[in-house]
Image (cartoon, rainbow, N blue to C red):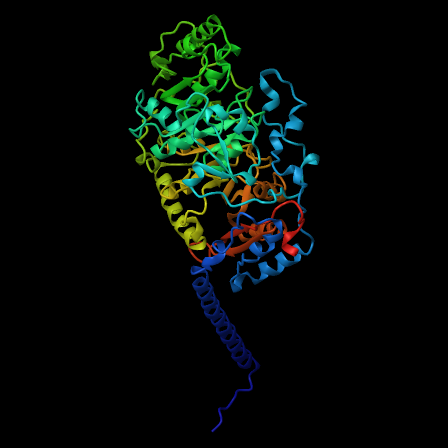
Length: 627
C-alpha cells in the first residue's frame, strides 16, 4: 500500500530540505575519499622518484665538442608526477616565449663584479680597483655564459686535487711564470698540480708538516683556516686530508685564473683581496690564518690589514707568515731587497703584533707564528690601537670599510669550541649566548634533525649526490649550516652563504663558522665572487621568496647558471607558486627540471624543484639543444 502523503506544503518543504542535505553530505564524502586516494597515489609515485633524474646525464668524452652536446642533453629526462601537470603546461607556455641567448665566447670567464675592464675606472690607491665593483642594472648581461668548446667534466675528488683538464681553463701563464716553484705544470691535455708554492718548493704536504711541528694541527682544535693570497690553493688542498677546511682567496690579477684553478681542483676558494673593505666574514671565524709570500703590506696604513686578520681570528688562533721578511738573511738576494730594508720591515711587523697583544710562538726556518690572546684583559701594551666603538657592528662585513681598531672579545659567555668533529653538532657559543636572533639551543638541535631528514630525501631524489659526482657545493641561504652538517660524511665541501643587504635574515654566519664550516656574506642581487662553472650543486632554501621584492628572479637564476658547471644540479625549496615561476625561467636557460613533493608528503605547501644544467658549449653551435 503506498505511503500516504500529507498535503501540507510545510512538511513537503522539510522533506526536500532533508534530501538536499543528504545529497550534499554524500558528494562531500565522496570528494574527500577520492582526494585522499589521489594524494596517496601521488605520494607513492613521488616517494620513488625516477632515480635517473640526476644520474643519466652523460659526460662527453675528451674529444666531445658542442656538436655532440645535443646527444648528451637528450639523455636528461625528468618526468613529472600527475599532480604537476598544470606546472608542465605553464612551463611549456613560458618556454614558447623564447630562451635566454648564449653570450659571446669572449665572455666565457666573465666575473661581473671583478671585471678587469670595469676595474680600470677605480682608483689604484690601496688596490681599490681590484675590489668588488658590480655592473649597474643597465650593464648587466641577459645571456648565458658559454663553456669552452671542448669542456669536459672535471676529475673527481681526490684525483682532481692533482689534475684538471687544460681545455676547461686554457691558461698556460702560471705554468711558465711559476715553473720553478711547482705551482702548476702542463701534462699533455691536462694540468698537473705538484703541490708546490713560492715558499714550499718541497710541496705543500712537507710545508704543512713543518707547521704541524710548531702548532697542534692534528688535535682537532684547528678546523677553519684563512689563506690570504692563495695562488692555486695548494696549501688549502693538502690541509683537507687533515680535516682542516681553508677559505682561500686571491684577486683576479695578472696571475690569470688562480682561483679558477683552485675551484676546478675541488678546493674552496673565492676571488677577493685585502684592500679597503672588510673581508666578507664575521668576527672570530677562523682558527688559523696564513700568508705565504702573499705580498700584503702588513705594516702599512697603521697596521690596518693585520687588525682585520685580528678581527676574523678566533681567540687563541694562530697567524702564520712565510716569505718576506721572514728569514731575510738567507733570501734577501733572491727577493732583490737589501738586508736593512727587510730587517726594518720585520721589526715593524713584530712591533705591530705586540700592539695587538699577539704572542710570538716561534720563528723557525721559513716560518714565523703568532697567537692571538684569549682575552684583551691580559693585554698590557700601552700603545695598542683603540677598541672599535660598537661591538654590535663587529660582524658587519658586506661593503664595510676596515677600521683602525681592535674588535673586542666578548668577555662573558665567550664559550669554548669543541674539537672537530664533535664541533659540527655542538651548540655554537653564539647560540648559547643568545647572540643569534630567534635561535635557541633547542631550536638549533631541531634544525640539525630536520636537515638530516631533508638530505636523506635529497639522496633519493638525486642519487648522484651520494655517489661522489658533486664536489663543490653552495648553500645560497645557509641558515645555521644544517645542510652542510648533513653532508659532512660525503666527499664534498659547502660554501655556506648568508644573504646580506636586508633585515629579513638573521646573521647566522658566525655560528656556521663555530660549527667548523666556512662561508661568506652575499647579496644575491649582485654576482658572487667566483669564476663561471665553479660549482657542481647549488642549494636554495626559500631564497627566491626572500628576494621576491628586492630584485628580479631572472637575475638570480642567470647568476646561478653562470656559477654552475655543465651537468651540475640545482635544488630549490620554496612555495609551489614561487617554484612555478622559477621553473618557467629555468627551462629558458636550458635546464631540465622536475618538482617533487615535500619530504613529509603532498599536503605541505613547500615543494622541491630539482634541475640539471644541460651540457652545451660555445663555439660553432649557438643552440645545441635544437640541432
